[in-house]
Length: 623
Ligand code: GDP
Image (cartoon, rainbow, N blue to C red; front, side):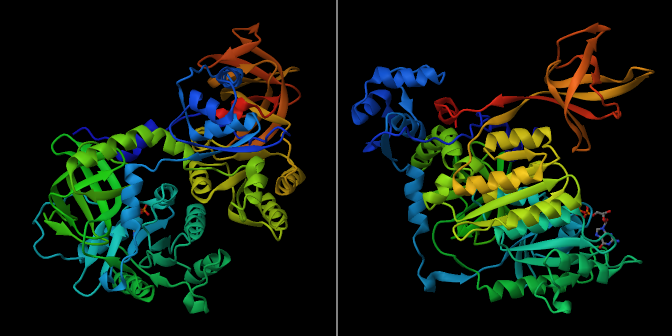
């Protein structure tokens, strides 16, 4: 049937707003204070701050925004505008219907109403190291009596229950999904199982996974998998893990490394035993009585049953017939199914269930709540839809080097999180070291992840979830990472000189950073063919894949996400033997770089120019 996954839908509806990174400083005038309640029209703002509406509209006009007097402003926009007139505006946000319900649910539960619950476990690790196979193997060992025979329904996440031990396994493969959920505020995972294949050892994605999990503060258990294979060097892998700060218990550390094989089943019960033990140690508890609350794990649209949503219950008991709301989606639960296909009337904490009855696809990572009546659920869903866009922008105030100091001063920030990507290991090490040396009493500098290679989507997700900035040295961000960073307002700073990185961070920490020139991306071209012409040099036969390549642009030459050559001028650019001043997206051309010939097929030419940056209302108003 037609399937549209919640996550894709989310990506598609993501706001692609302009990424203004400039923070705003008040003009040096006498600052007055004022406060206002939402919703704020220009008229309201005018009477509150005592500035004529026409003046406010003129300011907006200067920033390219045409406004009418009854137009409703976002809280942030109103604050910025007030600031322009030297007035510090406090906006009293009206709490939404959902927030009222959230508060209700957040009330502390008396200890006697709490019972032990299974731990929620996610599998992470390098591709092909056996995450899926282990999950499958465990599922097959978990024999739930009364399961609908033969029907293997796809429910990725499941509650393992052997009568003695209960563990909930999440099927959200990989650290990207893990961090994406965390960015949405869904910290469902209690324990991460890091799967490392015994015949392959610690690989780049293993390292990434470790850093993503550490940033989330979730305990790690290592499954040293595929131990059935010959020619494995387990000691070497324990050494690699120790290098990443995971010292095995067999080496006197406190990371449990369980030897497993998804092929033979060896070590699986030991792994489960250990997970259960951690849960006991951490005294994981939940409220079992009362209305349920939890998260959406996954959702999809099916032709037969409409919206199917997979939920993880955090607290309470979910019942068939319950009315739930999650974001702008709501409905009455028509049918509830456990992993394996068993239809149930109710389910308790840490149980993943699949429900039908929602009116639209909810978003993975969003919380769900049970309500008493459907009309209230509908009202909330509508309110959420209206607020969705605004919330996406307002909830998150990503850190940038430019707003760093003001956040520190406001006491909002105690630690600067940094992700470092560089061209070679040597640069990674030097950079990490010099960045860590910038720790001050006021602000700690913490490196979440440092690795060789280009900046990827997973880096951006980690930065978003941990409010970090990304620093690239002699590398670039791929297109997907770049557009994700733009929509999530994550700052990526690319450098070619190490001391400049150190200098910028230092200045930012001291509040002295003044933006001057910034690179503006103009276009990209792919090298499809190489033509060597004696006495003239190499001409790259290119296809422009993005934007345009003007003859006046500077060129950066990229091979496998690594910057090979930078800031190179173009000697000539031709279309059909004619010299041209620019070639646009979708066209072929021949490019000769000035004084540089070491170009290869499939290289990427990135065209850019330097522009003067000034902080304008424009760059803040569009945040
Ligand atoms: P994932 O990408 O981490 O989910 O890895 P998969 O579970 O898809 O496994 C990748 C490959 O490794 C598959 O061909 C599996 O059959 C194989 N595999 C997984 N676990 C084991 C194991 O314990 N022993 C052996 N010999 N092969 C395994």
